[in-house]
Image: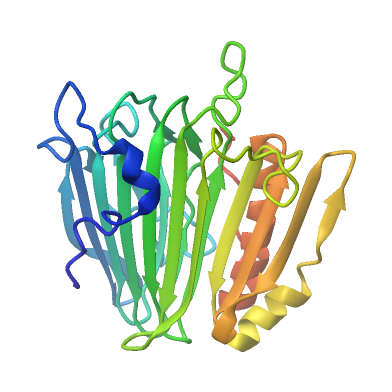
Length: 309
């Protein structure tokens, strides 16, 4: 596997105000650097978790096979042993899928970016797929608490024959906590970089939300909405076009929900966005898109959602 850059965020200008050190453990101290390395391989009739390295507070135990529609697919929970993401945390996640491997990644709970009074938290993810591999990476939502600062970089490398479904749901904060925390965080910065193996970048997307500097409720930003759902679909042009044709743009004024897809540069696939006021309606639209994407890319249905949702 390719070695991760230990600090791809180090030159990000939006972090300039947040390089002070916490009064507790300094940033990137032992116990604050979470590392996961997950390597999946196709063996016989199913995919196995052939390579696993874990360092607290990130934890993976084993692959499960709960998806009745894709019984050969390895399903993995990413677990945090801490009470969320804390100031000074530096997390690195590396995922690789061998030829023909099928894997589903999710998290055991929402990523709670805890309130901060110093420094920031950072995450770097690198995802590499081989030919004909299939990955669903559908974590629970991100909840940035008051005065939190979080920066995340995600790199995806995949050939045209591989398929990636990668979703993020960003909440405005603890919306219903006491008097409500709506866009009370200091910084949320997200960069997504997609490339072909050995080739140049297909595209790079970065968005930075700094509510105190630039109010998110402006037209062209969040406007009147609070929750943002994003789904990246990387697939062959033929498969992506079939998904595109089944994904009409929608605007529901009564439910205060808007959704639509756009085509990515270089025939890479689609980006699907959902804006809403509450988590569950946005999650439902994300799930609907993922169901269509799975049906059109691997010809399998998405199983029912777990009962606790």
